[in-house]
Length: 80
Image (cartoon, rainbow, N blue to C red; front, side, top):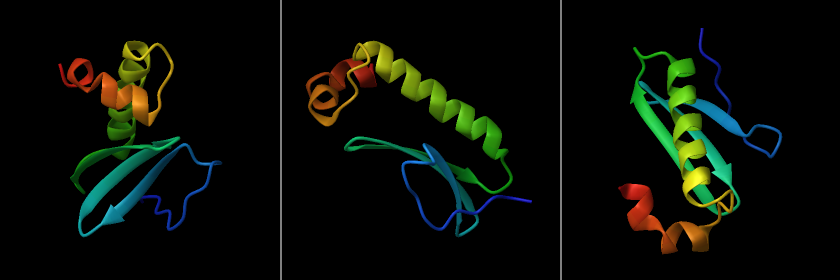
């Protein structure tokens, strides 16, 4: 059984949604939106772990100053 959330707030730092047979995991941090999406045959816990790992890597690259301006200034480093 999958958890479906039709709303978001600051109480839910990571959310899981089913959208047209796809799992969508997202995380909002200030003005940045991080998304991971896959087919509904995948495990949402693994996708949530993948998203958290990516966010942690971005936070390390930006020295824990994860905001829109810093991300745009260092986008080449993030994409590398």
